[in-house]
Length: 247
Ligand SMILES: [Cu+2]
Image 1 (cartoon, rainbow, N blue to C red):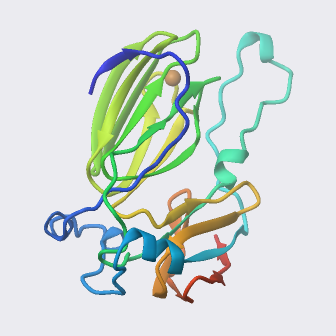
Image 2: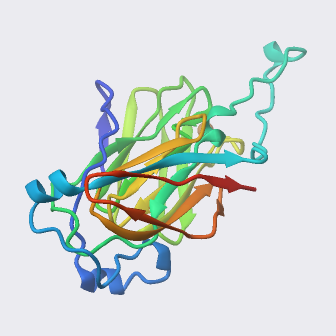
C-alpha cells in the first residue's frame, strides 16, 4: 500500500496473469473462482486468439437492489434525493472455472475506484488477482475507505482531495468496500483468478471475449446475488448467446 498524489486518471485496465495451480488450490474457499484442473489447452496466444470465441448475452434484473440513501444536506432539503441506480444495474458474468493454460501471463493490471460525490465510482469493479486498485479522493471532504472482507482487509485512513492510496488484490473473492465516515458509500470489487469475466452495461449486456472453444459453466452476479451456473459451449472462433434472470 502506498500514498501517491493523484495526477491524470488512469483508464481502468484489467490485465491478465497466469495463476499457478498450487496457489489456486490453496484458495478453494470460493470454488467458482478456481481454475479447473483440466480443460481445452491452447497451444499459444496467436493460435488461441485465432480460434477463441465469445460468450455474450444479457442479465435481466427482476428488481434492482435497494441502495442506502444519502442523508440530504441542509441545502438539499426539500429537493428529491439523487438516486444512483446505474451502478446497481451493472452485473458481473464470469466463467465458474477457466480452462488451464488458456491465458498468457502479462504484467499486473491497474484499476481505479474513485471517491466522487460521496460515492464510489464505479460501484462494481471486476479485476484479476495481482491488480492494484487506486482509491483517489475526488471530493472536497474526507473519506476513509476500508474493507473487512476475507479476500482483502484494509483501512486506508483519511485523506483529502487530490490524494490517493492503493491496494493490490492477491486473493480471489468478493471484496466489499465502505467508507468509515459516510455509511451510504459502498462498492464491490470482484477479484478473479482468470480473465474470463465481464461487467455488464446498464442494460445488462455483457461480452466475454477470447474464450477458447469448449464447454463452460457461467455465472451471473448482481449485488451479492448469484445465478445458478449455466452451461455454454463456445464453438471455435464463434459466439454463444447466454441470458440470465436474477432476483
Ligand atoms: Cu466517505
